[in-house]
Length: 561
Image 1 (cartoon, rainbow, N blue to C red):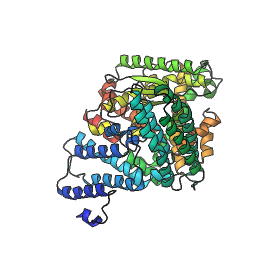
Image 2: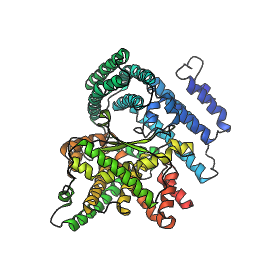
Image 3: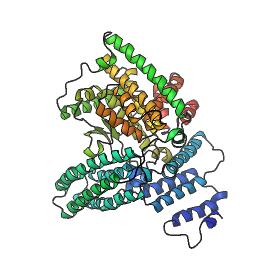
Image 4: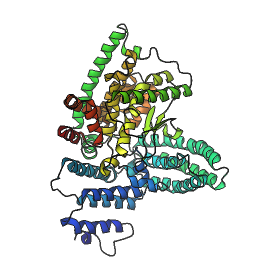
């Protein structure tokens, strides 16, 4: 048997025992394959128990949103090298159980392919790309999200808050020491970004967390002392990173891009094909911008007009009130249009982005309820910033539609209430970012935005997304430098500082930036092909209710309607 070939009684240690037992089971079951839903349950349960923070957060698309993670949020993720080998081995063993026999139905076929894709995506990220050795921001995000999960539970009793915080606080210093040991020649740009994040984290723990402890628990010496140790750990991690050997290049090349596209996203287009589509879409969007600008004022360019008649916003509070009103207006509008069925019981809260998230998140972002905690509500974060309040306000219809109605908020609520455990616990950025961008387009298509100046802003956002898809491929294949990429972003009217901040973030998220434009491109293609036959409501409901599956599988479901 395979298991006996790999291990004997001297090599089966505590660390690899679970993998060994899994290999034994795998051999026993070679002639008696288990149902896909049982394999799925094992997969979600295992990762949710061992990598709870990554499985609970939407920052880590290469992992499932495991319902089990909710029960293990007092633990940081198991990222010791021997544990990672166990994780990879366990998932590989589960993959071995998949049977090549024909499915009985289309939905069973989709479950099989979608689950297998999620498993292969995890293996690609941890075994091939080795994110745990190459990304210093991984450990920062996990520590911060774990802390945030505790302080976000505002209704929790003070004793429970203290116990949960202490459990996380005691794990953070050794976790950051583990990070320094795990990392091996990370890209220099990832170190720069991580250092900036650490400085945000220091501010968060020194001020926000300290104030939270005093407000919710009082002068608790144990918590305050432990928080002091965390501050020391962050400073040490910063020192470790600044003295760590690094590599200049961050680019993963054509082969790396292709692997993410095919393995993690199930997308059949090559990087060169994506570049061609994105460049074509960019040209078409430019033509639309110029045509609309001529209608508004033939003497001016679209860049000049975009910055005219901007609202005069005097404070962050005023901006937040504008976004809160936009959320309610969009909700009423799309309910009345009946072009998609909204899930019952959905709720959303609008909040200013916490300080520690501001280096990670854009001007606006969405945090979905955790899978497995469906009674919770979504959070729409807005970052007012210190500049461009008028422009951020003018973007409010499109940004709000993208994040809330009918964008991420509606899609996530449909997903977390899906009756199928596989569709409920797996996400895809190609699907969810594509849908959110398509949600912006619906504002113009159905007449929510009628003001030409606002429509010009919507087209500028579309052009920006087209450019991001182009930059994604060009950066990762070495066709342009970071400086050249920042200049291209600046040419759309962004400040130099914002352009540099964006391009650095794009460099560390290969393929993700292309997901916005390419996902929308695919949805528009499917809509043109099927909406006239099905009608908008049935098309949108069929599209959303199948889960965040690859588009070739979405098309099969639409064709079966």
